[in-house]
Image (cartoon, rainbow, N blue to C red):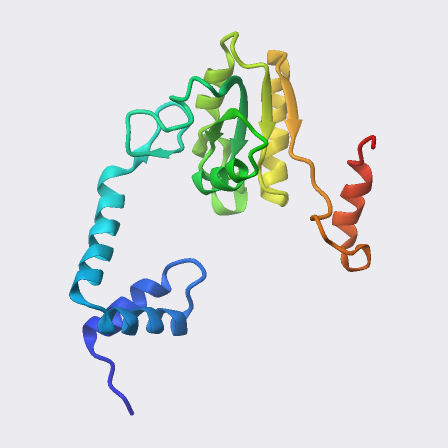
Length: 199
């Protein structure tokens, strides 16, 4: 029976805590680092420490940044009259990659989930409402995830924003490009029919 050395076991355990990394992947990563030159291991360690030391929340949108404001908030070329509300900072890059949105963002840092103790007060909702109380914002795009928590959060936000007279929109849901109808689940197909648009 092979004996796993303490530092190896510890790193495998730490890697296993990362999302999408199971015990076997964690072990592969650990042994890869053991085989790598010292320089590579030091660069990885420095990158992780730098991430923790230099990254903080943008005081406007609560996305992540290493500057005073995030890249989006400080960009005067963006349409600051539109705010796209997302659950996590990691939701912003996929939206940016589409090249279809030129507004700014607001990150909630979660979704309403009473079972996990996540209420509206735990999220950056008060900060969102403060941003909306000026005359600048014309539209709020609710881009929470299409699951129970995301829908609950979107409905809660809608109730808070409606009295402000600001246009509220929700990301459309439906069939992904290239999908076959016969393989679509009933909920997705139903949403596609309900959210159809003129062609």
